[in-house]
Image (tube, rainbow, N blue to C red; front, top):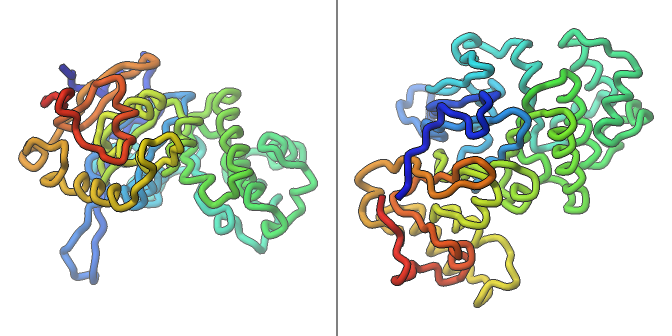
Amino acid sequence: MSEPVHLDESVHGDKPLLQVRGLTKEFQVGSVFSRRRVRAVGAVDFDLPKGRITALVGESGSGKSTIARCLIRLEQPTAGSVLLDGEDILRTERRRASRAYRRKVQMVFQDPFGSLNPVHRIEHFLTRALVLHGRPATRETLRELMETVGLTEDMLDSYPHELSGGQRQRVAIARALAVEPELILADEPTSMLDVSVRVGILNLMRRLRDERGISMLYITHDLGSARYLADTTLVMFAGELVEGGDSLAVMDAPAHPYTRLLLSAVPDPERAGGYDPVERARLREAVLHPTDCPYDDGSCSAETPVRHVVGEDAGQPHWVRCHLYAPAPDIAHRVLKTADTPDPEAENTPV
């Protein structure tokens, strides 16, 4: 049987760098006089450990980027708390984030073409970040930043349009590193880059974790890169976290039907019967509507599921928010088949 997950205790014994509790974000739709609100993020809880990379995965519109924008203070959360080193930054910095918080938390945006002003040279972006946070903007400092991200000093005199997409994203990372942050929020940092340069950005992020101990929240819809880069993976569905744990455990033994659905979209030449988009669309609609979910026994529509531990890997629990879960060791192979129906001989265990 599963056990409830207690988030107050770090799985590695150390106090997390960032603790998110009950984070909720609602947007008003319609006119300014409209009372209709749409919930983008619903009371999510998670920790970001020190010196580790956490991947936040899910489909477009699931709320991943909204979480990042709330953490970087570009959006004001509707409710919840964000604790950095034990201090709730939503209470102390209601109007805008202070420079002290910005020094610790930086963000790398998805679009390297839009995050750099085309009228300025590369030197301007790095110098401005250093000056704003009271650090010396010497030529030597700029050179070290460029070399850290795999660029050369002569590129400081270039304009953004003179660099490739991968080089621009490295400049964005260098700008974030200029203030020596403890946490970097990377929102789809490779999705707009050529496949040939994506792995270079991922390796750079991994090196920054290993050499500088920088924590990262890596937001992506690419489960392959999450498996390659992240220590921990959190799965987001319709504004809520539904599964989490060690990245290899989540990918190899997914417990939630939505996680299995995401993995079913990953190209696999060894999948029996090939890929049937019509069948996957049917399964997606079933998972999106709990009353039609093939795994539901009627509990989903009656009560909210809680977190339950379904295993433990790499010293951290593998948890899932679902009334039914499949602990079978061959689940990763069964759920990737086109006909994703429960095995009558290995029924899911109700919790």
